Length: 147
Image (cartoon, rainbow, N blue to C red):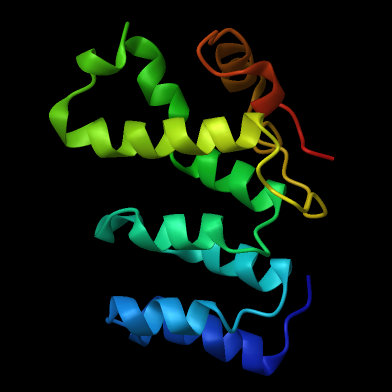
């Protein structure tokens, strides 16, 4: 996943300099490849809410591998301990809603491309993998590599 200097500069701008939602949206439209979008998604700061992440996921070049990575960066395993979405603490409701939407998109073939491989189990040890495999609330299709 080699990026040009222009693409790297654009990612740096979006990550560290851009503070205006409108300029973020305009600059995001200049993204040239799924790899560039993936690199941005990998580093985006989640503290500002989900508008930027949603814009990345809604981008026409968003790859299924990028979406799967974002899903797991959201730590869906945290929500397995709750019997229903209503039991999730108020401060985590928006994350749960975000992950529910993303899970639906991943399960309904929303993403046009599937060329960036992501394996959610790759960096986990045996105990972590077993725990995730036993969480019924996470669809099994999202526990495997997308390629």
